[in-house]
Image (cartoon, rainbow, N blue to C red; front, side, top):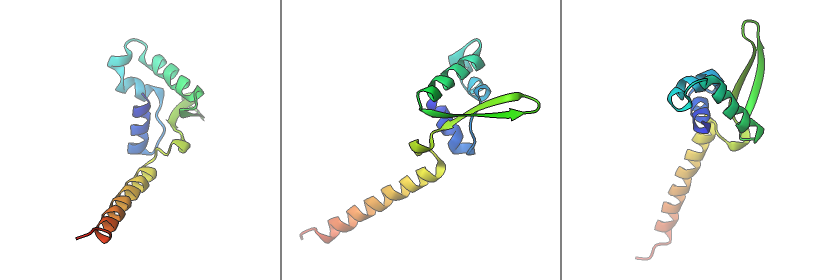
Length: 103
């Protein structure tokens, strides 16, 4: 379920709601999928693995959603930065291996 939260964040840059998780994982969660999704997401939030957000909506009242922790670095810009870092590291390794190679 954590990977679903992270994938949703990467695709949309928005937090995911339990109903969306329930829809995506209906076969795995079975009956009362939304309630089970909310329980698991709440447990992840209580353990400090995801961030829980609560907002008010005039039609839906209290709406909760979940997103990856900012400290986990799971956001599109972080992945781009990490990919860029890996690429630069590989280029530096190639450069230094050619520079210091004998022969």
